[in-house]
Image (cartoon, rainbow, N blue to C red; front, side, top):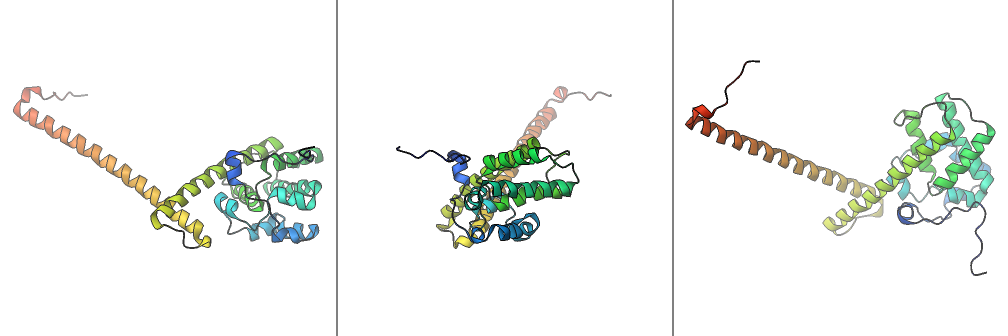
Length: 240
């Protein structure tokens, strides 16, 4: 056969924006651990500590040290990745004091989260679910698979838009400076460009508002001169 059949459960190829936001699957240091050690190091609470500096979707997408869900599956197997995602779901439900899902609900929800979000990494899980814990993102109880999948879908869209915007701002940095000083400073340089773009937009808005005020002022002056010359044209004030 020209092409081997895809393995059952293998995620589809990425296209378009998804391809832009997904990084290549590679063997990162975390995946050299035994499965038990991996769980100890990257279950929700330890992962929160390890991912403390990776606190935005752009930083998560750029991070090359934390494995994606598909990389974890390829290293440890499908049963492991579904169990790993279950850890995050159960941890969230326990934190919020919600009603537990049944085993069947947990199994299907974790599978759906994997297949829809396989290119996300551990930092993405940490960012998204900690937003719920911190109250920045509202997730009403009782929690169910549909609500969790909607939560992930909104995050995927945000992540894709943020990464595209960061590339556009990185291009602005390159146009301005001709280079980015060091790979470790890409995020800072992109952030600087974002601030500059925001400041430029604010300046344009301020100029537009000033121009409108000036136009209204000049218009008022013209009316005043007209009324001074022809008082009979001035509108009469009426009492309410």
